[in-house]
Length: 605
Image (cartoon, rainbow, N blue to C red; front, side, top):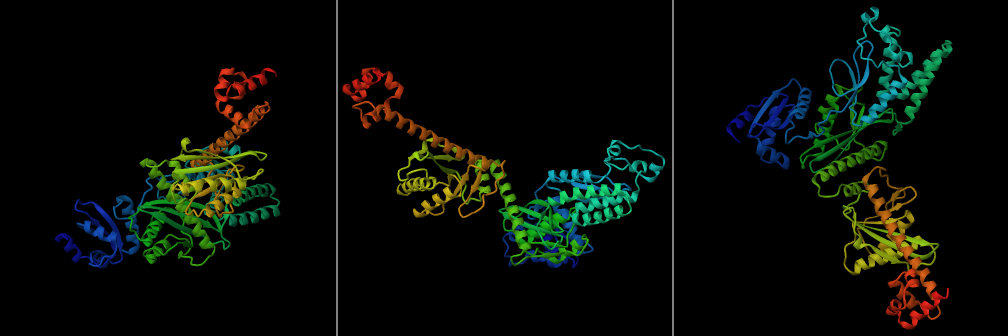
């Protein structure tokens, strides 16, 4: 420790504020906040440091800078802003460098409602940010359809209306706007509609529906049937919208569910927004953290980054674990919340626990996507294999895939095929054909047991590795038959799936329901390609067998020609070539006497 740094540590104030650690080049490598700067900063320089991250950080600190604040809450806000701006090496940083859009409701007599990526602190209300722009646009289309909110950007004031500065546009004539620019609707009525839009955006659709039903009843009783009909249409459209929102909680509470998945330096967080018991939104945050970062610090950073935006703070935030400095975080959140907020960590199986697990799965999926993109950039592994590993939750990357299919015609000439794909591409030199030996009649399950048993018995005998992924063409029945054979052989730690033709459903052992893989996923396209190739190979082999049996039968009709001679001929010639061949060619294969019998038979036909 240099003298300058030591002097600063000895003169730290007992006040709240921000501290910044700098390296020898003068670059900020860590930003932190403290209720008591003296106690907090000096704690980094004790001899009994256990955290590897803290030890690495302290070894790089060459200087220290302070910013004194009036309170710990002010320090928390400033800390978050500095981390966003400076992106210090040892802080958890938000990786998303793009600005997500909001829905903005302007602060003016007749507010506009539109999407924006620029947040202006002028009293406007903001809803978002929307990580899925498609959902945001869909919400706006729905709002424009139900509520007659103006689409123009005119500066409509009382003075402008009195001076008749503006004229109504096409929207008024097609009944998409009520003409506030000409004063055809009162400010109170217009802002009442805007407040209804706000309720929808906050997920209070059911509350709004109750309000509109009362208004409709009142209008009907006053014989204002046109107004009642308009309210009825609005109620119907809102009910359709509300029915599409998934009900996930019976207690109708407003809560956010937050879960994080992390591996290495990558952190992915999912936030599920639940309002009045319905899932109304989902947000994703991608962050980078030190490999030894504590879970409590990760969750504290997620909360700071997420709620620092213009987002609504609910009554309850459900988490896996209590974040670091939970009390100061709650104090800060409650300065922004409509009602008092609390953290809830569910311990027992409950609705909240189930929602947290669902949120966790979303976070894991997002993390896998980040890792896939990295792999794709690095070019080490075909992207489609990583996608397949993600979608099927495989333990191993499926670089070698073996796929099996049966083929028969009403139980005759039953055969099977095995195709092999290496790194997502067919390896035809490793393909294998099987003639079904122990099964009589059309029994796909028994045929699958036989070929799986024969194939992997040989794998064991020859001390070969089991492939990364075994596929069978078929649903749960074929999959169960295959796993039965593998288990009897004593093979462990294998990965196997079944792909049913009818609905292109993927089944895993022990799972009653098919796996949900997006239809556009490259992984689904790969396994369909593998399955189709196995089917093609099996069908081709079946046709060859059937044709050979047909031709052999025709040759056996010749008196003096047995099955061995017929098979010998068909290995050299096709049936047409045999019919047209001269005596010399046939003699080379079966001898002079047999050649004359064959020639005599076809010449007499």
